[in-house]
Length: 143
Image 1 (cartoon, rainbow, N blue to C red):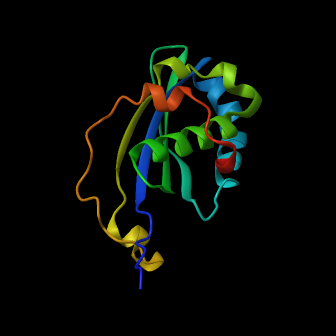
Image 2 (cartoon, one colour):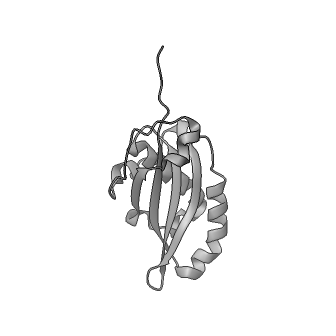
C-alpha cells in the first residue's frame, strides 16, 4: 500500500505599496477585501488584509496574509500572488508591484492538522525574495 502525505500549508505575507495615499486606499479597501474573501477554496484556506501602514503622504503599504496548500515555497508564492492580483482586479495600476515583498513560512500545525497533513516543514523561512516566482503568471490549473 502506498501512503500519500498531504501537501503542507504555508502562510504567505505579501506587502505591496498602494499609491494615492490613505484616502485612495480607503475608497478601494472594501472592494479589495471582498475580492480576497471570495477566493477561498480547497487550496486557499485564508486570504485577508493583515495590516495597513502609511508611508509618506501618497503611499500606503498593505500586507495581505494568504494561507495556502502547496507542494513547496515557490508554488505557495505563486498561488498567493495570483490571489493578490485577482483581488486587485482592474485597480492593479494603483499598486507598486515592483516594490512587493513576500515572507513565507510553514503554517501552524493547528491550521492544517484537521486536514490530515503532515508537518514536514518545521520552523519559519526567512524573508525570501521570490522575484522570479512572483513575476510569472500562475499555471491555468490554479486560476
